[in-house]
Image 1 (spheres, rainbow, N blue to C red):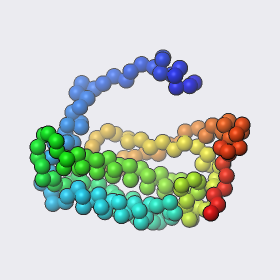
Image 2 (cartoon, helix red, strand yellow):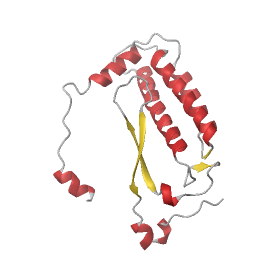
Image 3 (cartoon, rainbow, N blue to C red):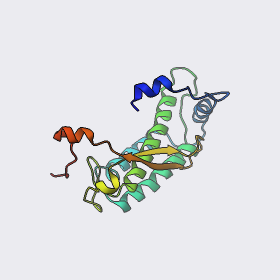
Length: 182
């Protein structure tokens, strides 16, 4: 079913009684944090970690160490964060801290997905799994939070969705999967 047909017949998902409560609570948690760690410190540590250990060329043990370190950064974000501006308007400190939380989420999903995918394909190169594995990995990987609580717990679940539709590759060789070569 194509997306246009689906959208025409799909119903809206019901909203909770207070749909903004969770986000408001998170913004208040950040604003009122009394820790000692500045968002810029955590962002810098996360950026270095992702560049050094979760770049294009990856290896399982290094990825696992990176995931553990990301979870430590997430714990510091949850429990030791502070910002200078406590205001409600034009608060760039709050915005930076909020964005950091989103980036930590994405970094964790990226790293967990890289650990899970035991092959090399496209921009993902596992030095411990150098070959592409179409039999097992010509699929879409989807990441979900098992719960929507913003409590810092790692609760990411990875699932795969049916095999990738290769019909375009069959009609246009530019889109056919190829071995990675440098």
